[in-house]
Image 1 (spheres, rainbow, N blue to C red):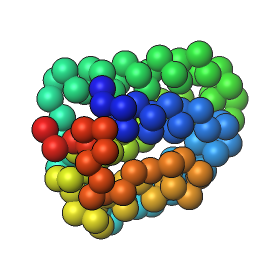
Image 2: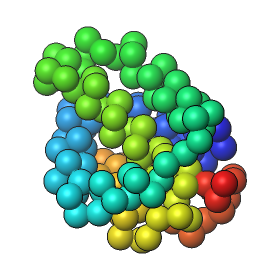
Image 3: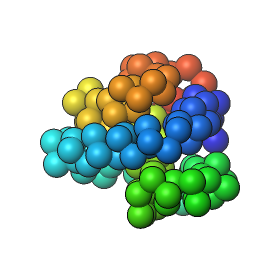
Length: 127
């Protein structure tokens, strides 16, 4: 996984459980307004998906009980949101600004550092 996407995954999955719950709600509010479309555009190869999924799962699995105590299914919901957003970070140059913002603004609002869509630093998802 490229360093930019790895940093994003590390920061996103380290958020407190309550912040992940609020982030997921914001994520779902934006889903019909560019999020779904952006997710389709941010498709990655099988190997890229495997790297991203493994990184997110490895970070969130030890926190499953903590997350589920906040809200049932928060572990699964957080994993989904983080994987989709990480794919968007990885493939950010393929997304429109509106699609990128729809998927990443909830993370930005939660305090996660999000790279500019036009930034190619650290690979940046042009593949």
